[in-house]
Length: 293
Image: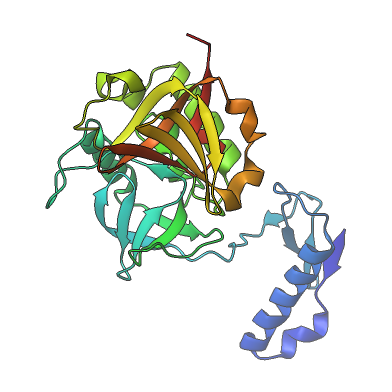
C-alpha cells in the first residue's frame, strides 16, 4: 500500500507542509492492517515528491513514528513497589506487593531491601510510562499503574518473575492478571527470591499462636465450614480462623462449595479481632488447593 504526498505542497509554508506529512502518515496508518510489527517507509522520487508505504523499496527509509506515550523520570524509589515521578506523583504498582523496608513504624521484612535495590538500579537513568487500569488511585491518594520502561519492559511483571514481589490482585484491576499469575507460578517453582526464604514458608494454621503473624504470609488448613453474609463468604478453618471473600467478586472464583473439605493454602495478611483471625481474599490467585493431609 502506498501514499504519495502531492507535489503542489512544495510551495507551501514549512509548518503547513509538516501538517500535510503527518496527515499522509495518519492515512497510511489507519488503512494499514493493525500489526505490532508494521513499518512505514518514506522516500522521494526524482521530482522531490514524498512517498509513504508499508512495502520496502531500496531507496526507502523507515519513518520513526513515536507512540503517543508520555515518559517521565523517576525522582525517588520508596521501596520495591512504590516510586515518585519527576512531576511529584507517587505511584503504587498495580498487581504486586513487595516486602516492607524499615521506615517509621514499619519493621523491615525479608526481601524488602533486595526489591528496592533492584528497582533503584533498574530505573537508574531510565524514563518510564504509566498504564492505568480500572482504578486510578488507592485509599492513600497514590496513583495506581503498571510501569513500563522505554524499551517496553513491564516492571511490575519483572519483579514477580525474579521472585522479588508476590502478586496481589485487587479487582477490578485485572489487566495483566494472567501474565502476573504465570510469572509467579514459574518463580515459585524455581524457588527464586522470596520463594526460597524460610520467612515465607507455609504456616499450618494449627501452629498460629495468639500473637498471630505480621506481614504477608502463607497459611494452610482444611475448610470445615462455609457460611455467607450479605458482604462476605467465609471459609472457616476453625472457630478462630477464616478466609473471607467479598461477595461482589464471587464471579471470579470457582464454585465456592468446591472448597469445602479441601486443604487450602491462602495468601495475604492476617487480620485480628480479639481472639479471631481472618485473611481477606480478593482474587482466586490467593488460594491454592493442596493435596489432602
